[in-house]
Image (cartoon, rainbow, N blue to C red; front, side):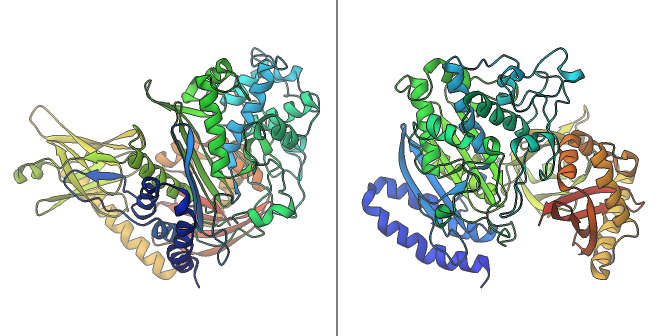
Length: 609
């Protein structure tokens, strides 16, 4: 039986009904109505006035995304209004309950930050002092970037210390585990790069799980306690997070409480949960209810109704946004009237999200699937709409009345740096197609502005003095990308190239033969990334720019993987990319490489296997 079939049958028909019947008596009817709508009416990203929303059942979304289980806790008025599990802890296993354990992944960071702030509050640490005055077992290496400015705890907690290593892959159960110092130095058996300062501290925001490993070691050096014990005594127990622990690996007698992790294709992560000795940034085992208790304690401390862990002043400082809206641990957002704090998490086979308004509402979603991040976003969107929050809800659009004759102005080919957008007309309906993606209908919201229903994106067309459309701007994910309208000759050339590409990709997919130099290029790219010196002349301009922006993270990933041991051609994808399975010293990776007709790299994607 496939994973998707099982989740649909078991979760939809038995687990959900069983949990609903057991818990119905414990919650008021109005709360049960909230839960029922969230379970049965997951909302799309766009709602259109005058049209019924095209909702889907949570069980169906879980099946489509290959997420076996999800657990949700909703905060209302500073209290947990409800907590419920959906789906199963493992394919063929027991239902998820509110007490099922998940890995919090990077949500470990804001909880870990509480311990630092507690010691600052007690006068044992200074947020703005050189961390090397506290570190004993390891020191931040001196270098040109730390000559004028030393690394501080404030910078560690806000990702502004200039430290490397974005995140961690964890370690398969039963494999050797590095010590924190080995992780900091990138020494075997650590599978991550050395954590080093490569930018002057305080000058930029750059997410660094490595910085939180430094904080972990610092806390142990200052207190003389193990990190897991320190967190239990100073944060978890005082906050009432009784089911939570930073112990890595999780004690064997608690494994029965765990939701096991799954890949995006529905396959179980081999060996079960990875182990994360990088406890401060990634090692918390917890439940949505316990994370809700963390959020509620922060809300109470901010309001001055509790000082079990932090004072009002320290909590205010924690939630004061700095670069990139980063607080001392959590991210921040919202308006001046409705501020919130938040963090997401992604470990191997786990995805989760926490959002809490400063004044009392919030939600925590935890999943045991690599596609759970998308599911968590859909649940957050639906919860926000259900409870009338000022943020995170689906956008609401109205279809404007537009003279059909006006639609003739917009069809054409529009060129962005890395892709073309084709706008076409069929009857009185306009469509847009970005690159090789599916063609999607667009709907007018104003005279020269159109929106999509399937994603939260819109197109705005600009005209010259003569009223002729000259370009469009794509608005999506908080970013604007401008595309120049091509003249007829250019459009013909681009269209012919696109048609030739489609034909070539179809032929290559049918033949299932690799491009002559794709394997050699792939091998070369990984070696160049390890050295931090990619050959940009072998890439298209758009892919070269993307690589430049992400070079630090890409180099860290390449170093984590270790030596390349073998490459195996697995086939050609429908989009024409060559698919390889790469075996590295520290892991197995699937890579897809796309080349232009003249052999330039226009895209590389990879995922752990």
